[in-house]
Length: 254
Image (cartoon, rainbow, N blue to C red):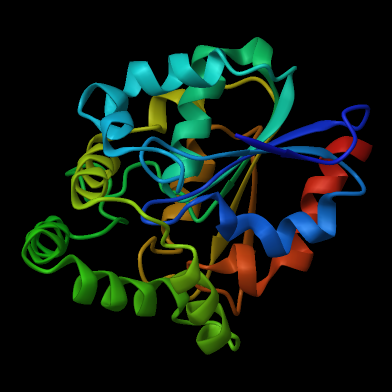
């Protein structure tokens, strides 16, 4: 974990998404480091300094992950996660509500792949095909994945170049284990039970998390806030970082 900013400032925890290391947050961190003490979490196996031994099957069990978050020396904080990171932050907030003062998710669905009662998600067949392609040729599959992540924003080309630099040194094993977890996570009941302030931000042009999921998510907890950014895709933490920074700063002022 890397920490940026004065420890006397409000604490903010940032959790990255699938495929990328914590460096993905750097452009946003530059807008926030004067306002928060920022803790940048690297999920198991994604940081350059972590060995593949640190990203084994046990590390990617949900309860092990949440317990590892709890052991971090972080006071009650705003937890903000992107995609997979947002889902993990949500489940952490449910499990340890005394550690989370505010929850913000960015491009995170209630479930990543479709369920019979949640159609606004990635079709199961598409996910299975991606999973197989990743196993067969991770390099070319990640390249196609980046194109989907950045699709929909005016800054797509610039965002894609930056995200490529943030893929980090994750092994094929880490990628497969974390992808499997992404497919299994379900945050819907957690969202419905959360009592702390929560904000879920979506991109209207997101190619991975359908914007229609925002309406369904809003129905889970009427006390939660939803924001849709019209000209944003899945990588809105880069393309619309100014808007996200303002949202995070308002979490403190409110």
